[in-house]
Length: 536
Length: 96
Image (cartoon, rainbow over all chains, first blue to last red; front, side, top):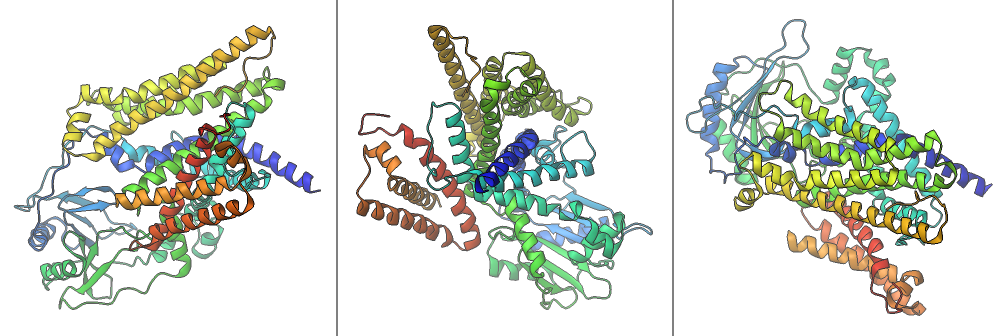
């Protein structure tokens, strides 16, 4: 009975992992890149200046300039926001002096129109944003890990949701199937074919198991109301307005009254916040009024530090008298739990070191899925090598594990090579990714599998390793310049793709060597045994 | 920040290494033979202590919750590094 249970779990693990593996690999590759989405976006907008040492700003004076502008730009808006110059963590970038607002909704509308404008810190006049090429940036990669591409957003949510659910099943059944999880905790036996692949799959999966469980479960929670809409529908009804109402109530968003310039001194409020938080810690000032409530000014601290990222520190003042006002009651435990899972998933709270740990954990996820997919073929090669199903799985494996990373590199190549005035430029950057992935699939299907592995791995290696060179040839933000300027975001991108190129080259060399060994071995023994055994 | 992270990584690596050496399979790989029971127990205790010490280093920063996440991240990195390097360890038994 026990053996029967474990065997049925093993079956479930194998098949839930296989059918979702390629989608999940795509989700993990793009999601892992998403941990550096803002950094990637900066690299894909080489028109942006190199990092400059921020000039000290008198935030009180800036607030006055901003209010002058807001009175002109958005009288009677639902809220005004003054963005003070600061190092932001969402997006992870230096935020310049700017104003943002949302108008009151027009009759028949749920939301008003949003506007924003960069301001000159000297005069308060409108500051033109740097004109950049049309690009999807890192956001596009990030977005694809839950919304896919080319298909309806809602359908994509469901598809990714089903795959995520099956991944959770695969993780739990994998732990059950793994007979000696503690005894084999550190066990890796290289050079033993299928045995080595299983060891590698086990080690990677077990070592980063907390991350995999967290990322899968929280990924499902993020879309809980999409996957299980009945609760909201029963209480609020169906349709977009009902959903909006649900989220408004959940987030404590209330109907707004038109704002006007605060009579109390905003610079004094900022000074008070800076006195308790320190210089450079004030991110923004929001002026708003709930309908039927008092007019308020809220001073927001730069987000970050704690896991519950969005639960930032705020000081609230009466816009008329300037006296401090109490904050809203803390969120309910269920909202807090949900926010914590969301924060753990997105990792916005992570500093540079922790962000790299997230990135490595994401790569280990790619490793777990990749080794699992390869394992499926090494187990079945002897018996099924000639069947269509086997060929398809093998081609999908090569195309996805080696070809998809090459496709992501092609996305970056397209960013540098497509003319700046190319029509639908941002869309074509993404098209290039999928073109390479698709071509890799066709190539892998018709080519000898081992050759396809080596060749596509070399393609990925070259595509990543040569990116810094392409960058140097097409922009002035090359590695020497970015290193000299201490711009670690841009330099870090170039260095990371170089390292990725190195990893793919190492893999290609290893596969190639093993292929030659097998061939030599087969020739020496004179057996007609299939060469197509465990490649890596 | 960097010395701190270095110390955390070292503790995690050494902790996992000690736990691995307490297992006869890996002691054979690295040392050429299994260790006597008292030494194994000491290694196991020391390994766990090092992992706990790494946790202590992680959570003494202002936000313990962030430290906990970082600890798990470091453990993953260290665990993978130890497991994949054990077979390539220069072995005293002459077998790699």
